[in-house]
Image (tube, rainbow, N blue to C red; front, side):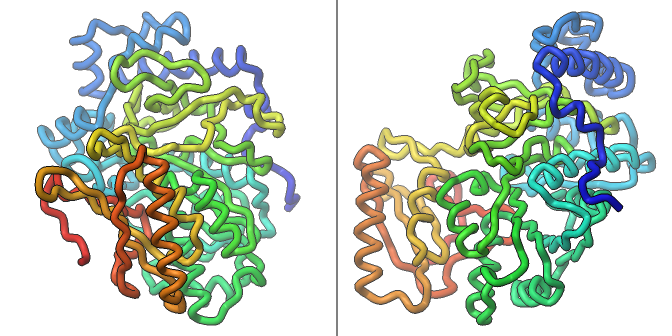
Length: 450
């Protein structure tokens, strides 16, 4: 088998803007007609909003299509369990079901996929793995629990499609996974950014030098941390390998953005299979290149559960494809997924984002894990950063780190007074999938290690 033959038509990746948009318009019309004819939810929503697919004469007419929110989907699912009225098939017409992680909102969404959907999902992952240089001669270790969360399922099948040897690191301990990575001479690791760090910490405990291993590429997904330069740099240093960011959603069905081998400081949008808008989350008006806004997705490939103008809640900043030297015509999200629109916390008039905290914390390699706790004390809100250090860290190192974190975090947050507290070894939560390191005790009772 040739090692440089892609598994899709590469011509679409190098289309110019005019031809990309013409392709998107044709697919948008087809998907809108399909949803109107087959999905009870869309049929009712289109009727109530006065929209007809025949109104799509230019790509700008996409704004005629009503926005879909997570709350809309949840309400449909709750009114007609278990899948709601968005899908065009029932359970007997599907081959797979996946659920969201349930970290936000009222609970997990349930998404159905047909055989054709799943073939498309694997194809989308091929863009990402081929784009960063993975080839059939590689051996990939998928450090993922293989549950109902969609996670790296699509990546697993994409690796098979490309011809990569897969090692599925299913339900086992972190120690066992580290040993398998070394035992099978894996050249590629796929994990969340948080778990890539956790694996490296465990390897050090076991006396395994990952920098001397054959792993040369890491596929990161599941968290915005994969695009935080400080976190990415830490991961690359721990593994002695290059890290590549990807992002997707259970609702969409697969990844929609990937970082190519040229690493332009962001992720390419797979624009021949998806139409992505960036809007102001308050006014719902589109924002221009270079401005932050909320990512809105229309997926062309998933037929069982059509997805038109879905408000993802992801915060992004879109820039032209020309910013990358790879030759792709696909636009880029600068810095990847920048976080969630609703991630921002207001502490005494100051905006606090988890991404900004992690960017500072990850500059200190002595930190093994951390947690941000927001609480109300007396007459005002307070914020505390709890950090767990490497076991060999001395008192002097802790004092230096504590003072540095206090100064840096305060400077980055308009002088906000961050309390810095040292946690005991192994005291803070560890995460395999999406990490949740910010706990806001003002919102609801949440268990927090003290």
